[in-house]
Image 1 (tube, rainbow, N blue to C red):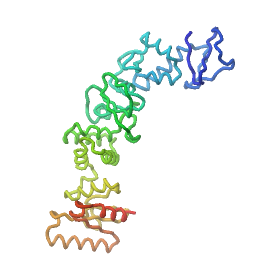
Image 2 (image 1 turned 180 degrees about the vertical axis):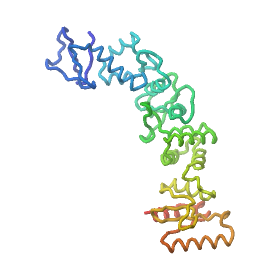
Image 3 (image 1 turned 30 degrees about the horizontal axis):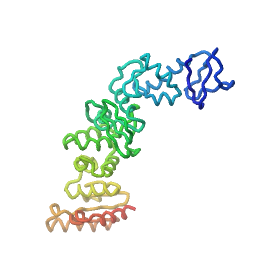
Image 4 (image 1 turned 90 degrees about the vertical axis):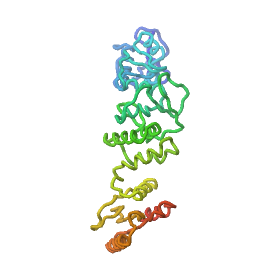
Length: 338
């Protein structure tokens, strides 16, 4: 006799005409299905077929055994479907429903399901899914823990994966664009990395603040310095920085978690290096190359006095201040922004 497990614990419904199996005489409501189906008119196998089909449609044609068990489908029913070819095993515990023609997204979904519930498409495969860089097989998956390594999957393990570094795209669990870029930094040169970041920015899915956070949390990851250089160079918020010292100060603001300023803008008719409009705060960086003559020195200080007289606060930082120990100056900037 084929039976179907419902959500009520340890309860199975008796089929019409079958011997009594110890279930309550009062009907047990169907809880796991989207709509109730009268078991007197529809066979349990048909209900199971509908449940499997609905799950597969959400997952590019593939399902995992653990998911079917969570739906209340019994192990015997699953084994029977495998035996008759209605479930085709792709990885241990992961099946294509009805046929193997599941497409690339189905392969990605199957790879992530095969690596466990805390597994996400990652690295080159994630970059391909996000549309920022092509990849080749084997498919790559990142997971937090686990022991079994599925055949045909390039498995990466990590001790922890922050929730903000994982998401879903097209129903597939995947690392975010920003985390994907970080994971790829160690295997790409600067030109390749720049192309990938530009593609991510053009896609509209890249959040520069999140990329900066991922970089700062990289903790010595391979390619981290290269990624920081490339990201700083093409970050649209830093595009107006002119001197190396200005680029360095903008990077220091990012690392310190300060609100990012406008760069090289006009304030009261004067071009300033960095400007926070809400706080009326201006920072000028005095590098030796760009302020190396007396006329420039005098002009800079005249501008400082004029801006201060109209209510702006102007802070000036030298090359030595920012290179030796910038913490004191950054603390002053933070206080001025409060």
